[in-house]
Length: 447
Ligand code: UD1
Ligand code: MG
Image (cartoon, protein in one colour):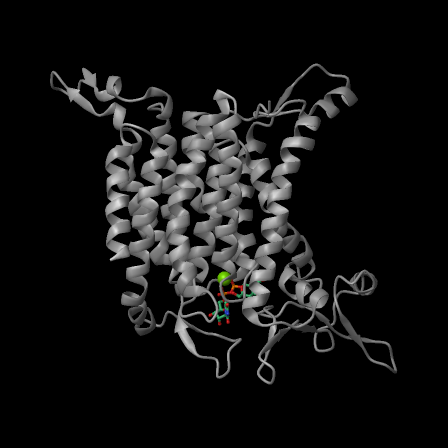
């Protein structure tokens, strides 16, 4: 009953929205997305298992088999929502009178509250975002089906971002970045911006690689992949609402664009969370990690606030940097670095990399010992010889266990998500205080 009421409210708000604000439609579509994803997951899960798309839940007694890559359902529902959204977003350009031959003589523009709607030019950006997300899902599925090697799959998101970068080149092409006031003063230059040219495209491709992969490697605990994406969405929306209420006119368009992409994403992600949270009934798969990460890259790139996007990714950036000795082969990296489940007490313990079977590079030994002294890893050494036996795998998840001790899987996930939320909100606060001090201005006008 409640579901029908929600759906009816969603459809009404979508219908009414065309005269008011695309945000209302985003909210309506978000509810439709939640309901559709939530209804589809239990109905199609067994088909995933049938074609071999399943995984073992390594942190449960008996390691039960559950369907994998279910995030593909959220992603597909999201893409269809994005298609149906177009008439509501660009309603004012619908042609009502034409003399034929494709002439746009009169559109509905007059009857709509102008300030809330997008310029027609945004249509190409919107379509390029949808195209980019579609290719991300395609390549993510390839990874889930063929279990690609790390060195190959790492660069896949850059390939998916090609439609986005090409449309950016043709449609906008700005490759200038602002020089912070502090650096301007230091260099004693009056130049306020620098043209990065081709490097700007490399930077955008790097963003497209970083966001999806950083979500994919902060994983291994039920609910964490989708949970962190929801937290990222919430922090982004807090930032967007600041701009939409207090921001300058110039910044409103970019943040409206961000909000209309993120609100429906939260709908499909919340439905997935319901099935993936502890004890997980489905796994999200790499498709979802890439898709979720790509939404934030797209929003940051098209909205020209990729530096702020990186601020939202502080925990993921830390996890990436912290993981780098293992990712780059300086310290052995097992296939799975997720924490170890102890069947005896049902708690999670930090997992460890064996340093005897495959010793780390010599240069890493003092580094590992220093990290141990800083309580950033735990190591075990041979009491007699002093030779390193093993070290905890270098992931944020294991680090939380080193700091706070063993805990149940759901508690661990919630602890990490809380840390992420607090850091994210503080980062936004810093962005609008220290950020404006460094750059000399902020697009938000506090009273
Ligand atoms: C990344 C991590 C890997 C981590 C894995 C967990 C790096 C370099 N890679 O690899 O260390 O172990 O994610 O997703 O950091 N699984 C669970 N419980 C969960 C989530 C996953 O048991 O809550 C297991 C299942 O067996 C599932 C498998 O992990 O089938 C999925 O692993 P996959 O996403 O393919 O691993 P990667 O993304 O390659
Ligand atoms: Mg994965």
